[in-house]
Length: 394
Image 1: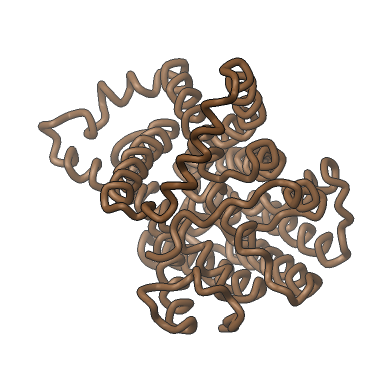
Image 2: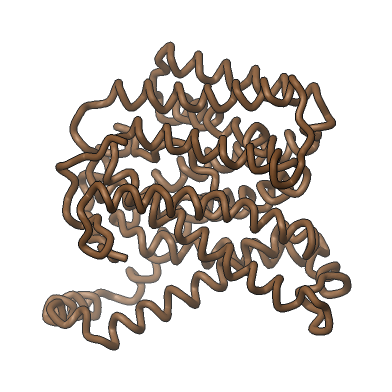
């Protein structure tokens, strides 16, 4: 494991040395990431087809936890040293006209709306993919995220594609094709749902990168606005699809007499904690290790997740399924390693890492490559004021 000795002291775990902090962060990241997928699979299997209800509950629990944390921090006077600055900023805000305030809020919702829509579509389709796919081949169905991300970067951001990236994408496409030829291990509908989810996830990452400059790189605001808009969209989906009606009638999570009532809600809470852990520990791992190390970690996590499907859930495996898993994971690994080696040796700015990991679709628990801002986005972002880290230590 390669640890960056120049990493800022912002990233630490209870004051431990960086190597120990990195080791703990890697273990917790992999545990949260795999746990998020396995817990969601349990919910989809025993609670019901709640593709939209799962992210809505996660959003609700996340908002409650966030508000409690903010209240706790404020109650114990954590921000006392910044009271004067806060008062000065508040006075400046009060002086502004209300009309300009509403215009500014409208513009921010306007630019965050596409990201919220993509977030909602990603989580719904991702859960649909997870419910249809086996855990051993789930990573194959979701592996096209990298392809779509590269494609959108090329089309929308005009980023050139090196030969190694084209090779990695070819390996992934080949792996998905081989896996789809064996419907006993990878259902065609799972491939369709996974590819659709990957498209929206790639679009989400691009939309977030475009929306950040319009919020002065304020990840807290992006996160809150995204939660608000996404929650509304998920509620609309629940009503239109009839999913909420089905859950009220047949799901144990709304039957207080069911033996699974308490367990189902406990799993909901645990999967939300795991999703939050993925966000936090992704940030820590990226900040404490080299990008190539994070790519290897993502490869190892996906391999363990796949192996668990074979060993724990007794998923069937064939020559085609093993070959498809090997090709897709190898393609993702090659992309991560070659991209990190082609980048400068200087560490990415810690604020940029924080922005992307905090706003990423981490609730799905399948991040396998280092989040990063493209050069064209960096130029716009440099003009904006950078946000201070909200949480420095666990």
